[in-house]
Length: 137
Image (cartoon, rainbow, N blue to C red; front, top):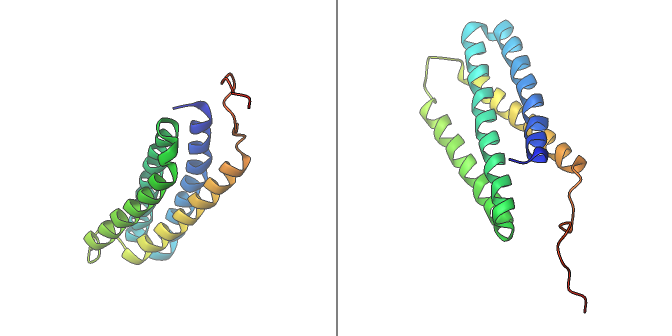
């Protein structure tokens, strides 16, 4: 993984972790221990799914730049399907507060997406690879 990829991943993960910590603190006060567990699990699910997805997408962009857009669409579709599976599996659980879990999923996902958009806007990517020999017409 290149340094700018790691920087992008960190710029996304740190705000998401902060949002998860805030969600755990708020839900522990409002919903008790089960709320805190639900918020923590929700934050971990989002950070894991989004982190793995961003890593896969960055590797695809390096190896197969022509497949970048298609891979991005497929990756987000797979993430949504996996998230739907997680929600279906834990629909009637008593391990944690499912409402807090769902709100934490939503909030942490929005924080991750905003941080990712900000990181991509601030990234200075070259349009032309340095040292590549160009053919003149």
